[in-house]
Length: 289
View 1 (cartoon, rainbow, N blue to C red):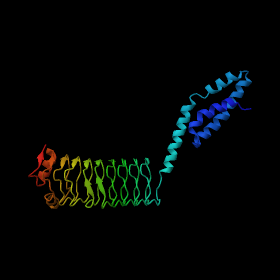
View 2: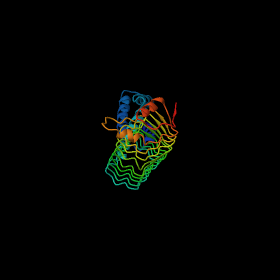
View 3: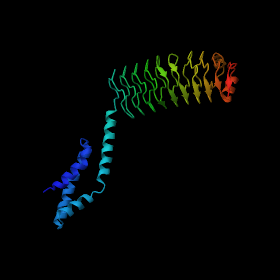
View 4: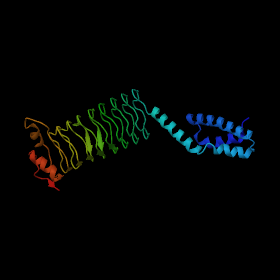
């Protein structure tokens, strides 16, 4: 015979977690065990109140245990929900969602809206993300390598350790963003718009930036090593600890290219200035700090 007081007690403790499968299973197991313990105490001659009290005390801090089980269950459920690899999701609405470590590999995401979403640690590798909207999204530690991002928008996005290497970025707009340790290597960036950006630790190695305008923008610890920089403009820009290493070369081709770069009105630290001066860059109107 079951004790209704114990049943009501468990119902009250578990009510906040109704619908969580693993918690429901825990409740069923615990209900059976507590009823058995109660019967044992009654058989030992204890009154109803004492038997109930000792039975409840025997399970310790059950609310903490339930919380831990519920959190684990919900975490596992989120992992299942955020796996969208190899899916046809063109023009989907993901605006404002939270999908940490989401998997969007090899998926059709053309025209999808991720504005304001928290996609920390997510991977879009090998996907079609043309014309997608990532405005205001948190893209920390996201992988956008080797995919098509043609005409995607990243206005005001959070870009920290975000990887765009080897991707198609024609028509992409990076507006009002701070790029921190972002990888933009081995990429054609000639048709990308960089407007009002701050580049901190960004890697542009082996990328084609020919004709690109970075006027008035800030570069800290940025690598342009072995990049194509013909006719690039850093007019009025700020450069600190920026590297333009050409790598091993038997010709003066890289040095001739550096001479085409516009540093008019730029501000730079002494090391960056000395490095460029040694490459015979035109630094006639540069401020050294």
